[in-house]
Structures are given as C-alpha cells and as structure tokens.
Amino acid sequence: QVQLVEYGGALVQAGGSLRLSCAASGSVSSINAMGWFRQAPGKTRELVAGITYGGITTYADSVKGRFTISRDNAGNTVYLQMNSLKPEDTAAYYCNARKVGGSPPIQDYWGQGTQVTVSS
Image (cartoon, rainbow, N blue to C red; front, side, top):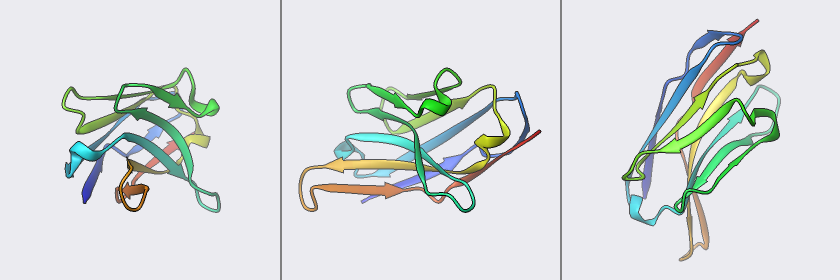
C-alpha cells in the first residue's frame, strides 16, 4: 500500500504561482511513476504532469512551459511548480502513484486532492 498526502493548494490571482507537494509513504520502493492530475467541476480527470522513476517527465499541452514537475532525491516527494497560472487551471489537483507489475499489473494510488483556484 502507498499513502499520498498533498499540500499547497490555495486561491491565487491569475499570473501568480503555486507549488504543490505530495509526500508518499508506505511501499514507496515499488512506485514506478508519480504524477499530478486535475479535475474541474463537470469535467473528467486529466493528467497534468508525470515523472517516472528514471526521471522522464511528461506534461499536458495546456501546461507546457508553465508547470514543472520534480521530485526529491529519495523519490518519495513530488512537486508541481505552477507559474503563470490561468483561471482555467482552477481544479482539484490529485497526486497519483503508479505501480507496474505484480497483481494487478497496474495499480494506481491517489491522494485526497488539493484545491487550486485562480481568480481573474
């Protein structure tokens, strides 16, 4: 089992910055990748950014150049630096950890979510 706790959501003005943190605990050695997803009211949850155990990153087109995902050396904490925030970035942000292999072959763990609200 993996437990995820997120920090950092807040109300911010457009153009501002926020940094989200996600701390993983439990069976962290088995995590293959971590990422941030977001879900706005009435919309499906979407991937914002991800980082693999090897450090390969991926971003949604809508956040490229504005958001940066990173992790600490131990790999147990992942960060999402969000700059030049826009009102359309308003959503609940969820941390995700993925384990690949074993049974079931893919297992996802989720944090409780943290709200980011960007005012215009």
